[in-house]
Image 1: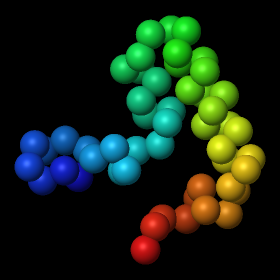
Image 2: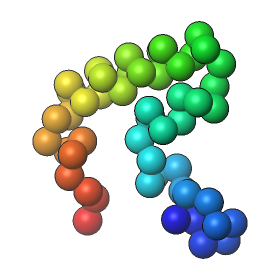
Image 3: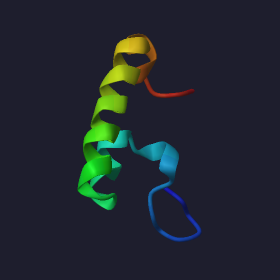
Image 4: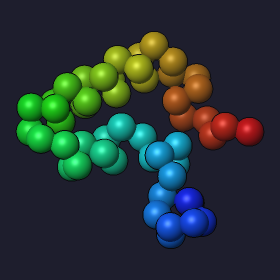
Length: 50
C-alpha cells in the first residue's frame, strides 16, 4: 500500500483490477494484454516478488 496517500500502489494490483478505471474499449484490450502476459510469464505471474 502507498503509505503517503492510503491508496494501493500500482505494483500491488494486476491489470484486471484497473479495467474499471478506463473506458469500455480499453478494458477489453487490457484484459487481452493481461492474458497474454500470463501466458508469456506463467511462473512469475503467480509468485510474489521478493
